[in-house]
Length: 273
Length: 273
Image (cartoon, rainbow over the protein chains, first blue to last red):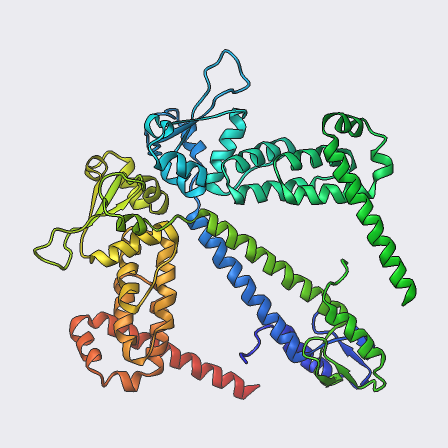
């Protein structure tokens, strides 16, 4: 076993040598005294654990460097330079257009990109651009039902694996990630939305997750809803959901029921034991 | 503090409760009994440490997923498909050519690439392709003093951050990484070469590292050399090096001298204390 580099250990050895009381020891990590009842690990296992931690941290540093090497600059930096459509220093060979951008009157602003990047990130773009389809010939990909900002953020993520999310943007990007099968982005948005779940948005999130088959959000929302059935069934969103999509509401009640059954069964067996 | 999920702990609690002897405890980690002298951590610190380890492992998983998302398929997969020069499914817009490939008679085989990738990975390619230089206009980048295989491996690394190394390939790629300022690849090759250092190749590695300013290899080789001066100064490579580049040999002796001085000083002060 390699020698341990953490000088905490060296200090603690002298501690324990000077330790006359056999019942109390000093913890190498927190330096507190403790009795045999609160004993954790022996010194050797502590040293091994600290080495493991150091190795994991080194691996993290290596992976971060790899990510920094593989990520592109944001194409938006280039877009800002002006010429977005013609191949400039960015060597763009395709543009994406939010075909029905929410700003009527103005012509939609194209988002420049590289075919090579798009086909690497999305199997849908791959099929679209590698087989001589309209988009491949024209070098223009129309994306419907999306704002310019969401499309920009989407393309930006394909280059950088980074996005600045709020709840609206997370929903918009999740829809695009689902449409173009960008798994990594979808997972990223799902985690964000789960972190923002609360009683107020649980029903809407559940419906949204159902529509775009976001399993993570679906399960988290369903769990939250079934924990607060009495409150939520009095809300307007609930009544709306019953109107709009009763099947979803049925699924909620089914989940609620099976949860109660399980809890009952659990109580039952814990009483027996 | 969050509840600890590791069931080892739950088990160990019952262990310590049934533990009548106050002087010996059971290590939660290795399950061995130990006395107070060999005490490592208290239980709480053990639990915190295990949680930290779990978190680090989760972070590693996330970073690995990010790398998998950002890396490209190898352009060589496309090269194998035949048409390497004309933009095919790979959307290549530039080719690299090993201008003096070691196979006379045959025309050099071009390695297809994307300008967008090259400029993102190398400041040298960036300057070359963004300013209307010959390479940018012709779409052909001639690379001198390199084999076709090394050039292929180099371009492949720019897309995948992966390379299959032996000592020769590591040296070839290090030279290219230095020439085109691809720091990440240079570090990768240096680590590999350091791991292959031994008495037999230490002098050649030292000379090579010096020529291509590979600091990691240089320091490691110098350390190995100065530890084996008596052996190495009898070798042919040593005599050759004195012939070819005496300044390098002087630097070796200077390092050797300062090492001896330090060791002496260290012995001296440790005798005093």
